[in-house]
Amino acid sequence: MNMVKDQDGKLLTTEEEIRHRWQEHFDNVLNWPDPVAPAVVDDRQQNEIDVSDKCITQQEIKQALKNMKNGKAAGMDYITTELLKADIETTACLLEDLFLMEWSDR
Image 1 (spheres, rainbow, N blue to C red):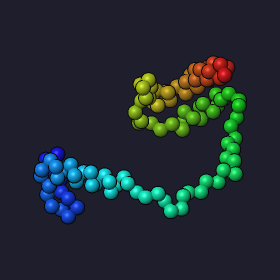
Image 2 (cartoon, rainbow, N blue to C red):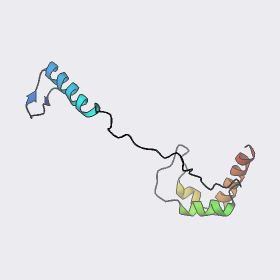
Image 3 (cartoon, one colour):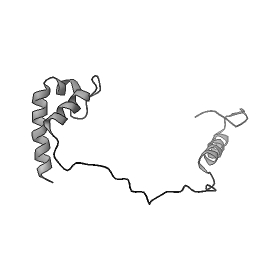
Image 4 (cartoon, one colour):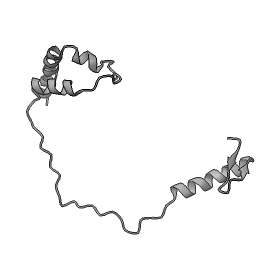
């Protein structure tokens, strides 16, 4: 950077002034005192999640496919939502086989 303004709006042009201003800026932004009253975390309450240990069903896969939004960018595999939805029956069948194969490895 060639020029930076100080806190009062004065233009700083020398390398030393600019470097000092950036140091001043980051000191103000990053150096905060410790909080007076730290956050209290209640570890007594258990957050239990109801998770099924059964493999996903073809109906669940179809519903998930139907709920997917169109027009989104493809992932690293270049598979778009529209491609998956083109034939939901076939996609659900293939995905079910894939999921069952992965689930049985557990």
